[in-house]
Image (cartoon, rainbow, N blue to C red; front, side, top):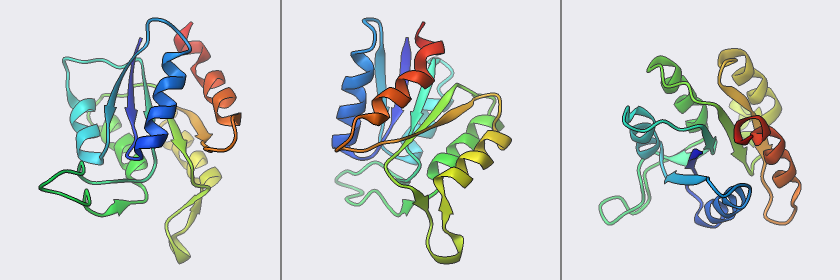
Length: 153
C-alpha cells in the first residue's frame, strides 16, 4: 500500500508516518511538505497512491535555502489540492488530518465541520473524511484507523 502524506509540520509528520507504517507491514509513505510539492506528487502519473493523508493548512513552497519561510501559509491549501485532484482526474481516496478546528480569520473563518461538509459535497467520490489530530491525545489514531480500514484490508 502506498500513502502520500502531505504535512508541513515535521513533528506531526513523523508521528503520523510512524503510526500508519505500524498498521501494516506493507505500507510505504511518501511525503510532501507544501502545496507545490504535493501537487507535483499528485500529478505524477508514474505513481499511484492508495490514499492521501492531507493537511489543510500549509505553505505554497517547501522550506529551503531559496525559500526560508515556504511562502505564505495558506489556510485552505488542502481544499485547493482536492480541487486540483478533481480537475486533473487524480481522485485518490483522501483523508484530511488537521490539528485546527477552524480555518481563516474573521468573517471568512470556517469551522472544520463546515469545511468537511463542503468537501463531502464537492468531492464525494474521493474525500473520505477528516481526523482531528492532537499531540496530547490518541483519539486521532482510532479515528484515522477507522477511515483507513477499508483501504488497508
